[in-house]
Amino acid sequence: MSLRILIFICFLTILKFSSVASVTIECNYTMDYDEFYPCKVQNIDIFNGDRLFIEKAVGKHDKRKTDDDVEALWIDDANTKFFPRNINNVFKNLVLISIRNSSLIEITSDDLKVFPQLKTLILFKNQIEVIREDTFKFNPNLEHIYLNYNKISHIEPKSFSGLENLNFLLLNGNVCKFGYAEDREEVLEVITELVERKFCQSQKFQTNLGDEI
Ligand SMILES: *[C@@H]1O[C@H](CO)[C@@H](O)[C@H](O)[C@H]1NC(C)=O
Ligand SMILES: *[C@@H]1O[C@H](CO)[C@@H](O)[C@H](O)[C@H]1NC(C)=O
Image 1 (spheres, rainbow, N blue to C red):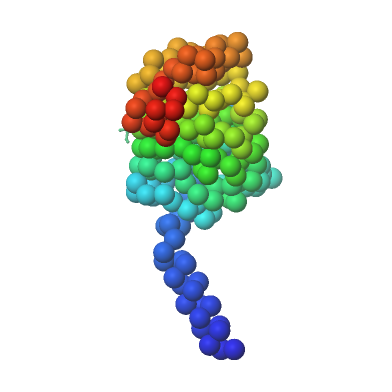
Image 2 (image 1 turned 60 degrees about the vertical axis):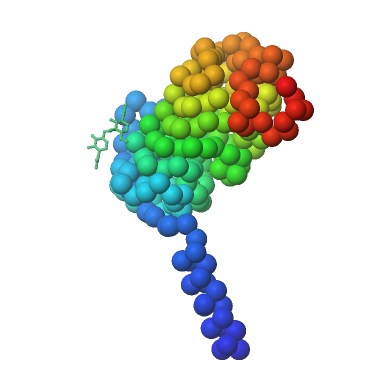
């Protein structure tokens, strides 16, 4: 019995030290011109390039507000190549996530699947190169996506096709040349270009070479 407990403790210890680094974020919860009650992350220096596990948030909430009232998470100028984990357990009701002017190299369905209620995703000014077809498949409520000023050279054709509420899509400032899509009609034009004209394809990111082009 005690051996089992010992083994269990060893297991937990290994789990703790082999997992991604756990951190506490410090939030400023002040509403300025915000539509949603925000956490604006202050201690940006915790980001060290790796994927972080956000364990909890601290900061002075508005009167009567709690972590469950936080609807928007703002992270700016962060050295993070990968989307942080566990944010969904800290803030359970996020509808807006913004990671701007940072160093994200990818965004995946694994990153986003825990936010089924997400409406706005702002990834302005990062290092993202490719958008895969399944990226947004767990986020059918997305209305606004900002991917402008990344390094996108490849978008799998149906990446945005399932997003029926998408009425704002910024892809300007990438390797592929896009204009602004600021209403549903313009978003549909982008989707048509991607699907029908196979716009924004790069050899580097083809998964089934010879199949499509
Ligand atoms: C939080 O942000 C507001 C403005 O957005 C600023 O006035 C205030 O000083 C900030 N609070 C802290 C603790 O940094
Ligand atoms: C972007 O982040 C860098 C630090 O990583 C900072 O020096 C720069 O001022 C930021 N640019 C903008 C436009 O906020």
